[in-house]
Length: 443
Image (cartoon, rainbow, N blue to C red; front, side):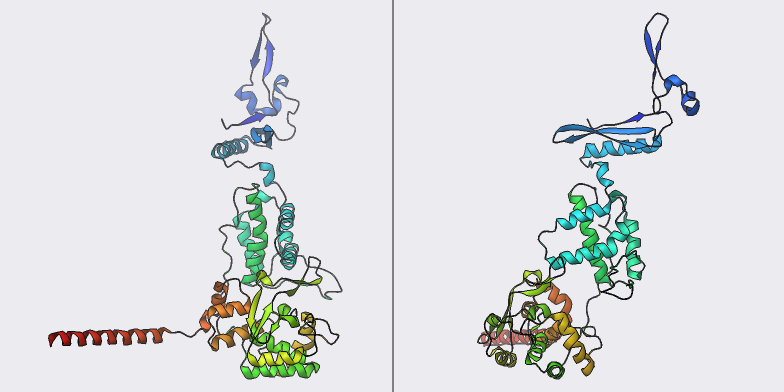
């Protein structure tokens, strides 16, 4: 039977020898127990008035048989409450070794991160960065079982307001000024709290170290859906201006062709700069996206699979295929499609500083539009030209159409009036046909 028991470490029963030579056990009276400091010596244990007084013990079933566990308490009421809770957990199959709840969060976070064997190195680096920057400065020393929903709610608010504990790299070669946190966007809060911090807690639940996830019912800030006004876009004329300006900045056709590819095909910059000549199907008017530039766990730039491992074919308009054909002349199949002046692959970060910033400033387009925003340009132009959801999903490499719809649903033209007019026309035709049939029967 499930049982936990309480032991008084300060007080013991006394064995008294009677005149006839027999012995009897005596317990201290209530009066003596109320005056513990003056307790008769024969009722005192070796630990009398030393350390915590009450010990709750219970048996835990292990692979090697029952093992006795115990926990100390200063007060009897606290010990009784713990014993009752422990018995209930054992009886209902909810038992968790209390020692696991004492694990420091930092220890569990490291075990969780080391268990992430199926993610990309770039994702691993993001988890590592968020743990070091925000999660561990707040929770690193906290006991796993002590974290509450109320504490998490307060932390979320701190992150939103830029007041949360943090620790950033102090590498002077990276940043001359000490970095300060700003107000955190809802999407970033969802990743830091829901994915990185939450991943550690869910790992602990699965391992049986805590019985429930304190993050489970925490309400994270909503990510407001994009609207047409918020999505960056360019007209066809502006796209051509961007491409021409990119070539004017460097004098190289590669930069013009890269700008056009980003604006019309929707590739990520790392995917575009990883394209090779053999990935271009001029006859079929498509590009094969098999790889992307990413970083390993040490931050070194390497080739990897596309985001979410979505290898795909992307359609290419004829005018862009003609531009790429000129670029490919004299190049081998294994050569990179877009090459730097030294012949290697274009570095996306270098291209941003060397080309994009100058193009953006020269044309004054869309304020602080990033290179990544050109994916939105490609999507909006494709939708306006009649592309359906699946085609846009394929172009952008979204894992499923839900992501595509969540971002661009408002751009597809409404067909409500078209559908209702079609229904009215068909109804009218059906009734007219029935009227004609009735007239023929009457005749």
